[in-house]
Image (cartoon, rainbow, N blue to C red; front, side, top):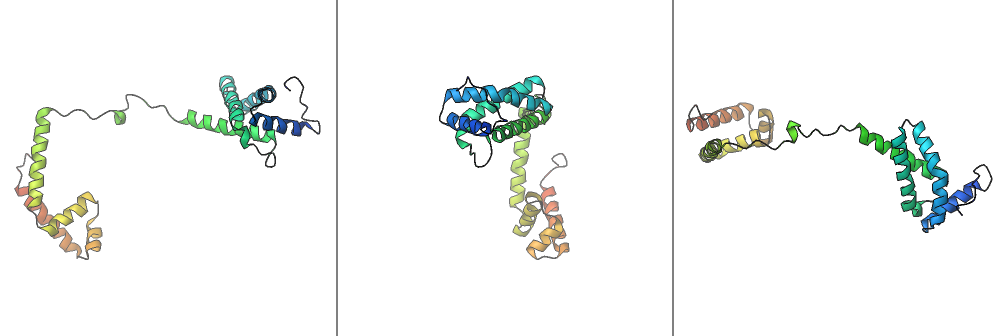
Length: 193
């Protein structure tokens, strides 16, 4: 099969290409070799017209033909001709390549990608002690003040959102939060805050 010339301008040209893809689906290597010899240079030329450089066009053309080999069983000649199907694969591969190229490369030295700096042992000990004092101070708060602090700081609600959620006047929410902060301040030195 690989030895004859395909004439797409002939009435049976489309049928021949469709039959070659169907034979490729049955793992007919000769049919695939014929398809490859016919389409690989045409796909590369098409990709070059889409502004791919020579190396990228060659690489994508190889990927396209590999996809044809792997997915020939998905070809449906009632949906599209072999040429349309193969060039659609080429177009999609070109779009994928453009997307990959447009994504900036990650810089290994990017601060956001670095692990956090290790805390010095004495700083870690002070932070741990401070955390324990904060937990103890929170336990001493009345439940209505503690729930308001949780809504404000853990749930990120504004004072008016808290008032609406708990059906409380806004002034009550503000005064309870202020009382909670005053009680918390009494547990800490000025150096702790």
